[in-house]
Image 1 (cartoon, rainbow, N blue to C red):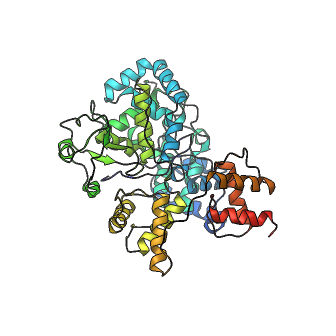
Image 2: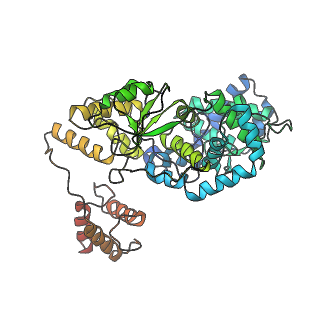
Image 3: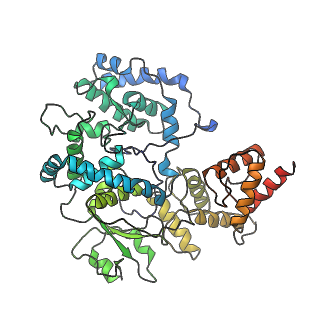
Length: 492
């Protein structure tokens, strides 16, 4: 990891592990027609995979038991393609992930398992608050461990094919767990992506790092007893390089005229950043003597800024989402007794969704600012492309993929195509939104209270109207949408 500026889209309230150990889970709509999967080919894939599995050493009896009655799960595909990680603003996610209730529950869970957590901290050097925070974010302290059949979920994702090699490898790991007799096939339950237990370990991470901490002869991360799962998580973080006694990061204030090109330089020492005018948000000097410090701008230059260190990146290895890492670390601080965090978020400039992220990548690449791929995920390459575009256009080069930036890019494309490259359209006023809500209600849509705010019901109703009328408009309040609603109310 060389830079963590920007935002990977947010997860839902019940979080699942992503990547090497953890995945994110959210309620998702149906897969779109253009991305439809031919599920009739699943049996053919299973036959081919069986050959590969047996060749890799999986006993035939284990394979047959694991796949008995298994078919592809359409819900898994839907969840995978509509992860809330890519569709929710970081401030909304953190409000849920670090809620007062979760903090209270976390403190209670830490107290109830105090002796065990103390022993785990002594052995692995990872603070108990961090382990408890991961437990809380991943499974609400064991209450939401997931009810998906792990073999079926990963077989579905491997068959679907976008990340075939990755999920076939995880599926083989799951089969090795079954072959070892650690769990029975239909009791191996987890998230839609195969993450298991209290802290949502992927099968490969289980094989590598899970421990039998309670001494019962089993590495049981699935049971109601969380001991093995908590210890396994601490061991994971320890092996990945957690530095005992070192802070994960600090909130900072960027100096006036800060050179955002420095964001591309990778980790530096705190003395390097001090020389360039960085200070703590409080105005105090940065902690001295720390290496590998990077600036994190999770919502661009207009949001909070952090200087993050090694332990932040260790949490990213558990789940490579900025929102996840911040949630775990901020929650750990609250569980440890620190006061409620308050950050100034740019709520009027929302991050992009997976769909609009793809649009941004396509348009930037078309303008000559190559994003290194079109997948809707705003990673290091996309952020670098954004900064090049921002620099070329005299904007603050913070790499933040937001709705305002996308609008600017759209207008740049329009200018290249000979269209008018003027100011963006005037946003609708509160009175406009009230009128929209009144018109929607008159058209028979459920919009809740007419309050001038574009909430979930209002947005859903607008989307339905736009789709029904076959309009090429974004499903959000705008002057153009208001005019279409007026036409609809007049019967035009």
